[in-house]
Image (cartoon, rainbow, N blue to C red; front, top):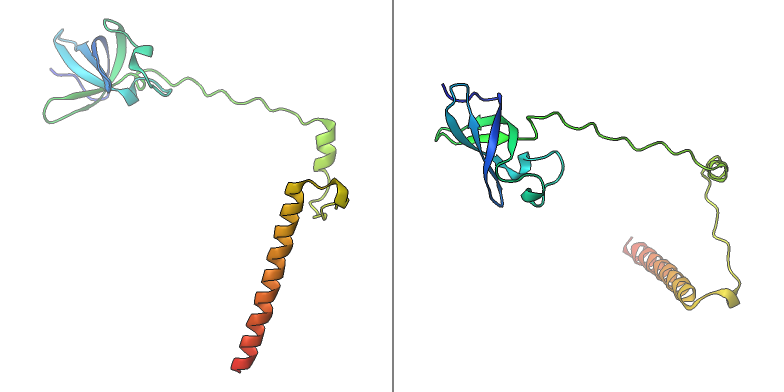
Length: 152
C-alpha cells in the first residue's frame, strides 16, 4: 500500500534545498517513502530562508498534496496544520477633534490666499505655472472657436 492523497503523515526532514525540503515519511506498512515540500508549502507566512523554519532531522507533520504519474510525491506542511487565526486590527476610536472635523458636510472651500510677501519661491512658481496653464487653455479654446466658426 502506498501513501494516500490528502492524508497526513509524520516524517523526518532528510535534506534542505533552496526550493524546498525532502521528507522521509513512513506509511502504515512501515515503508519509508521520500516526498518533497516546496518552499511555498512550508508555512502560512512568507518563507525567504527555509532554514529559518526547519532543520535537518526535524520531525514534521506533512499532508500528501499529490502523487505524480512518475511517482513523485508533493507534500505540504502548512496544509497539515490549521492556519493560525488572523489577528484583526483593534478598532481605534477617533479623537473628539477628528469627529468634529468629520461631521462637516463635504463642501469644497477655496484655498485661502497668502499675502504676496509670505509666499515661498515654490509657491510663487506653482502659482505662475497654474496661471500660465489656464491662459494657454483659454487661448486654445478661443482659437478652436474661431477655426470652427470659419469652417461653417
